[in-house]
Image (cartoon, rainbow, N blue to C red; front, top):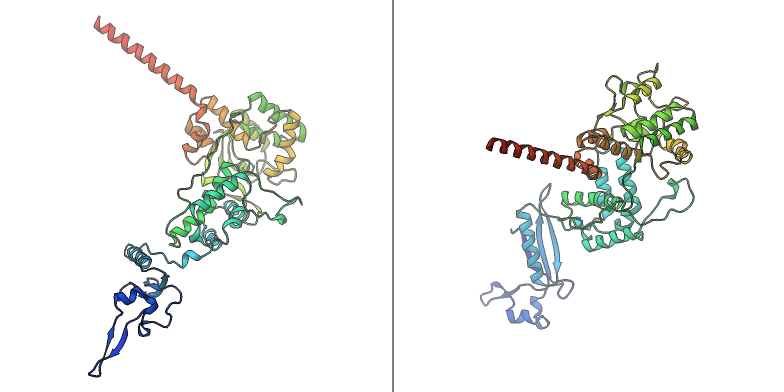
Length: 439
């Protein structure tokens, strides 16, 4: 039997008797078929005139044998086009079950998220949050096969305008005020649309639930950056003024040294507060970064691998190594370098509220800077001191140099002038040598 076929659901062959007592089947003539209203009763099926006339049938390949399927059409030409496409997909192993396309996006998204077994819990929480806040309110009830590029383009504009469907869980917030959506920044929009929403769609394509990804050609807005200001920058006297203010405010060298480490060496706050005494290499002026504070899927704080899983040695200035050595003197190797009064590891969020905000206000410096901005301070000062791309990449723990260059490439333009000056000097020397030989 053919793997795909077309059936007329309204018209059938008729069985008629012959003079010798036998029977034979006859088909309606083309003239009769052109005028169905006068078609003789013996050519009409029981469903004549009901529903769509043409049925495209096929056997669906799958585990446990084949299953017969059908799709109905008003016109024969549409059924023939469907069959031709279907047979081509079956032969080339591109077959997509039409019924699978009817699954809701919510069901696909949950299956995709459940399949993410290699990501960190903090990443899982971000996917969960973005799905619940923005993606599912818009697409959850929609059949995944019905999502189109124009619909996605319209949603992107809604996100940019702050008018997209949303849902915020008030129970997860301390404040009682209702959270309202704002115009979404390009960087965050890229993650919500391309990474989270797109992740579920790519899963649907990979699992042959849909044949193509409607997000593939969608253009998302680019991050233009701050046109008025450069990357956050602090001079060395500014850094020391902030560190001294931290000591004056809390009376604890821990806060002073932590601020200096963030501003001079550029670790992430979670990496710095996860350092243990045994991670310090005093003689090598460096510290081993191989863990960070993160959260589990319920939001509880825990130790985990560093971002992008990139372990590294963090370079530390000699003067700061001496301060660290003094800070941990006599401490157990498994103790945290930066501890609270009660002996627990400093919590980065708590340190931001307890120390950093007050330090900024009292010192009158870095008023708009976050703790994370101190990484940029460390990078810009290192580049100004002559650090190359690979050194800055290693110091900050970027997965590859591309990320480093995308952020800091504009800070290396003076190097071009040095190279051109060297080329000019060599040219002058070469021409002088050639003239000397000619003479």
